Structures are given as structure tokens and as C-alpha cells.
Amino acid sequence: MLLSFAFAPFALWPLAVLAPALLFWLLEGAAPRRAAWVGFCFGVGCFTAGTWWLFVSIQGFGGAPVWLAVLLVAGLVAVMSGYLALLGALAARVLPASGAWRWLAGLPALWWLIEWLRGWFLSGFGWLSLGYSQVDTWLAGFAPVGGAHLISFLLATMAGALVMLRARGLVWPPLVVLLLPWPLGAALDRIDWTRPASAPVRVAVVQGAIPQDQKWVADNLDATMQRYRDLTLPELGTPLVVWPESAIPDLANNYVEFLQSLSREARSRGTGLLLGLIRQEPTEPGEPPRYFNSILALDEDLQFHDKHHLVPFAEFFPVPKMVRRWMRMMNLPYSDFTAGPAEQAPLRIAGLVLEASICYEDAYAPTRLRGLREATALVNVTNDAWFADSPARYQHLQISRMRAQEARRDLIRAANDGVSAVIGPRGELRATAPEYLPAVLRSTVEPRTGLPPYARTGNLPLLVLAGLLLLAAAWRRRVAAGAAPAARP
Image 1 (cartoon, helix red, strand yellow):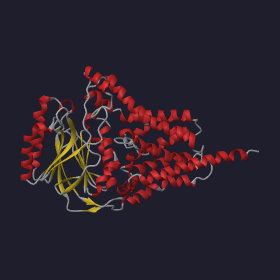
Image 2: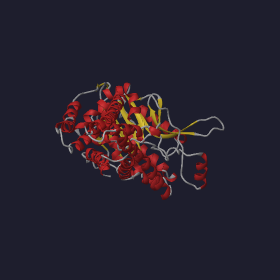
Image 3: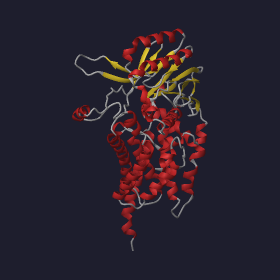
Image 4: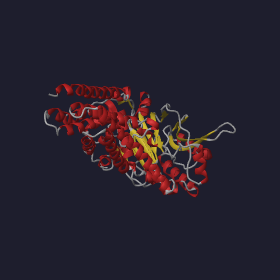
């Protein structure tokens, strides 16, 4: 449970070394079954303490019965804990019982491979990856080199070094592993991996702050639209105005006239609009409607970004038809959006080329790298009000800051009630809006070009390194096992 406090808003980042070190120590000498159970219990503590806020969205705002919300959250925690159970079992079966090959190679490689796997397998859920805890430390300098995953690997190696200090023998190797990454990260952070492409662009982020329990009430729709219009009109003349995810809580198709009128006014003042909206695409007769969670870019051209990584049990329900029929009979809430393409062109607006993401899409680092060859900045629109006043919004902001650090580009973040922010290329918060209040955040974004190493290679080098280290550690165990009988008197 302590590991969850390494992340925002608590930011007790040393726990990102100490907690895995405790796990590695508990795994020492454990049989495979017990090691798997230890790993599973570690995961239950971490993900229960770190993602309990999912209950708020499912039950508090989603309207699901308490028993169903508890079941869904417990299911996610169990699945995430299963990855750490796998780590424990593999550590007991394939790694040496002790020594540098176990603590400085095998266990860090296993930790990283498991973290990488849970970030994409079966849609993936990369929340609480170790590297995110270091956005405000010197280790953040490694982000443009190998992303959050490289930082995770370094932290896991430090955890192994900490355990290794317990053993008699050489003290200097683990001490070097513990201390060297910090000044090296500070030195890497001084490198300008990207360069300015043009003059800074003024932006205005409109935060409507509609309470989540009021947002989808039909009687409040007109007031919601009026609030966004009233906040937006004074900002016309600013090159770019950004609204958060699903700013209008209804199908955009029903408000074409409203959007056209707003777009005409914006274009007449030289303003581009970037709006988070829900839209429906026409389908053939007899086919079910297709709904998209989208960003609409209104400038000289009409452009869309459709959300690809949909939220299970919120934006789509991965259950059989018979379960859907039962849910409909029981009047339980469920809905389905259509996923957008995995690869979508950046949005070109107001002199910026924006790599766009919606909600927790920015937690999927590899998919965000694809657009960086063209993109000069990043944008994320979200509605973290689903999770009320919980750590979720601050954890998500931390993830957004890491994406800016990896890409070495500015990031515009528009949230319904916070945390709206403009983030600099080193993850610094240039400006933030007050939370839970209607506000307009004004700042500038500097377009940047150039590709840091991580944007060129992704996770492949680290995947190869972790695989080689794991194989080498397993081979070392086998050699030691073969030599053991010969060493007996």
C-alpha cells in the first residue's frame, strides 16, 4: 500500500525504491507458490490503495449498484495483482537464489517486463508504473532517452541494489547502482533534445467546471452550453481555444447550428477551436449507430480525433450479448462507443501541429510517439471529475507531465473541473487553472521540432536489454545448479 504514496498527490518518491526493495526481500528464498502469493498480495495493496477512486466513477456517478462497482474494482485489482504474482513465481523458478545476477539483473528485468506487459495486454492499464513517480526528480532526465519505462527499470535496479547491500561481500557495486543514476539524470536533463520551430502561440483553456452529478442532467444542458459560450467569447482573438472532453454532454450532431455559429465568430477573430465532443456517424440502414468520443478542430478545415483507447465498463462493455440482455433487463447502466483508428493524423490548428489524446489515452506512451515526427506540441482533453476529489486527477496530471518530458514538447491539458494546465517540455507546470471553478487558463505554447531518442526507438531497446538480462540470470542459475553437486565433499 505504501507504494501508492510514491505517486501524486503525495509524491513520496523514495517509496518507489523502498517498496519494491521490500518485495524483492520477501521473495528471497520463497518457493514458487509462496512467491506468487507474496507478489499477488503486494499488488492487492498497491492497486487497492492506488485505484480505489474507480469505485467513485462506477457507483457514485455511473449509477451502478454498490455490489457491481465493488466487483468491477476488485476484478481490476485482482488482474493487476496477477501480474505481480507472475513476477513472484518466475523469480522463484528462473532466477538465482541470490547475488548480483538476481538483484541487479533478473529482478529489475522481470519487474520491467511485467510492467510493460500490463501496459498493453488486453487493452492494458499502465497506471502506477514506477517511472511516473519521478517527474519532479533528477531521474526525469531519462524520460526523453527511454521514457517512463526506463525510469521504472532504474528504480527496480536500485531496489535490487538496496537488497543486495544486506549481503556480505562487495558494497561498492550496489552503492554505485543506487547513487550514479541521479547525477546522470540531472546531466541528461540539461540536453535540449528538441528546438523551437516558430514563435510561441497564445492559447486559452476553457474550464466549465460543471459538477459531474449535474453534467448529464438534461435540464442543465442549455446552461452548460451557455457557460462554455460565455467563457469562450471574451477569448476570441486568442489563436487557440480548447474545451475539455465531452464539454457539451450530448451528441454534437444535435447542435450543429450552435457549433457553426460559434465557429463563424471564432474564425472572424482569427481563433481556432478545439472542442471535446461526443458525435454520431451516419450508418447504413439496419446497422447500429456508431458513437465516438472525439476532439473536433474548427479552423480553416474540419478535423477529428476519435478516442482509440476506450475505458472498459465505462465507454464499452466487454461482455457477451447474454450479459448485455441481462443488464438491460436489470436496468443497469452500460454504453458502447466505437474506437477510433489506432493511428490518426495530428490536428493542424492555429499554427500548431497537435498530437491529441482524450482522457487516459495519454497513459499509453508508445501510441503517443507515432505522431511526434510531425507534431510540434501535445494536447489532452479529459474529464477527471468522474473521480471527484480523489488522487486520480493528480495521478493523471503526473502522467501528462511525463508525456511532455518524453516528447520534450509543450502539452495543453483541458479538464472539466481540473487539473487544467499548460505543461512545459521538461514537465514543468507553466500555468494551472483553479480547480472546481469555472475559469479560463491563458498561457503560451512554443512549437518544437526534433525527436528525442525515445521518440525514435520506443521501448524496443529496453525490451531487448531486459530480455537479455533475464536470459543471462536464468543461465546463471542453471550453471550454479549444475556446479552445486561437484562442490560437495
